[in-house]
Amino acid sequence: MKKILVIGACGQLGTELTLKLRDLFGVENVIASDLREAVDLIKDGPYEQLDVMDKSRLDEVISTHNIDQIYHLAAILSARGEQNPMLAWDLNMTSLLNVLETGRDRISKIYWPSSIAVFGPDTPMVQTPQTTVMNPNTVYGISKLAGERWCEYYFQKYKVDVRSMRYPGLIGYKAKPGGGTTDYAVDIFWKAILDNSYECFLKPDTLLPMMYMDDAVKATIDLMQADPTALKVRSSYNISAMSFSPDMIYREICKRYPDFQIEYNPDFRQQIADSWPDSIADDQAREDWNWSPSFDLAKMTETMLDNLEVQLVSTK
Ligand code: NAD
Ligand code: SER
Image (cartoon, rainbow, N blue to C red; front, side, top):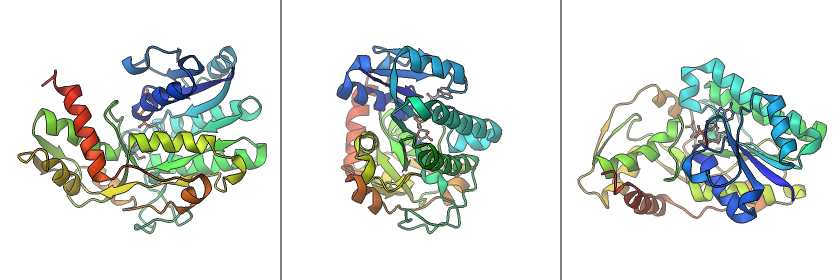
């Protein structure tokens, strides 16, 4: 049996994607890997401590486990990227090129996520189209746009079956986010339950595209299972689920926690958020591989609170 390798499996997305892939394809067929030691949720299955920057070690893991598909998720996200631009560029680019080069002859399918961060201040902000002006102005966005160009290049030049989508901000309760601008939309739930108050680093009216984790995981697996001939986009697909601002999510949480307080103290992340779209047009993904989300703001908020209340009850 050929196997799947998840790189960056201990992160916010990797944890949940690994769990779902193991559900679908069998625990023993999904090898989780990350720079750090395995987190509890994915500890029970096969695990390799792997620095994806070390290409010979990557080759070794692929050979040892007879890897056939790779989900490459390791990256430095937008906010952390601005704090160390050279490190972000190096990790985000070198790791992708290592995976693409390694994958040329031996891997049947590669997944690599891009982001709404590929767009910038010159991009049309409302219902941003699949193909438009981009001009990102964060190191993270620049690295994701360059990554998209590399993915398309490897597909056209070497027939590497690499697939990608531009996630909006991802929201889930199983793993905490790792240094993005949209992290507030996860933190706010923890603080609502634990402290009944939250200090937000974005302004109240900052509208951003967002997605609940179950939708993101489903989209990822659906794209990887889609008929390759149906996929017209080999850079990265726009996908969309909902858009909201800090004030909108605050009001939604107040429906269950009426005394919840919020204070706004915008920092350097405001400028990053202001450069990104308000909403995304995802008609191409809907047409090519039947993408459609299941969670809106109300359903996502309810699901996050239901699950986090159970999870956090012992720590309160
Ligand atoms: P994360 O920061 O939570 O996780 C990244 C993981 O990569 C971490 O566990 C980290 O230890 C690991 N890692 C870092 N350097 C590594 C290395 N050299 N070798 C191996 N592993 C290494 O990130 P995430 O939120 O899970 O994002 C996963 C992917 O999805 C990234 O490519 C990110 O750009 C993309 N994405 C995420 C979001 C989001 O909102 N979370 C939105 C758009 C795109
Ligand atoms: N959620 C990500 C970030 O804020 C977007 O790619 O960096």
